[in-house]
Amino acid sequence: MSSRNPLHWFALWADWFERRGVYVPGEESRAVDPVRDFGWLMAAWVAGVAIFILLFALAV
Image (cartoon, rainbow, N blue to C red):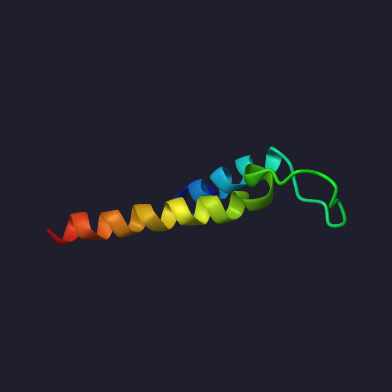
């Protein structure tokens, strides 16, 4: 049933980013890892750009 949810693939992709590592509050001494710290933001940005492109593709 969850495969019928249109956000299912987005959630799986965002979870892939999280499996690579999760930000731990208070761990300030390490270098910033963009995939670990901003995975959800990256997934949301790519999904937003894809929707934006699809809207213009469908409008033509």
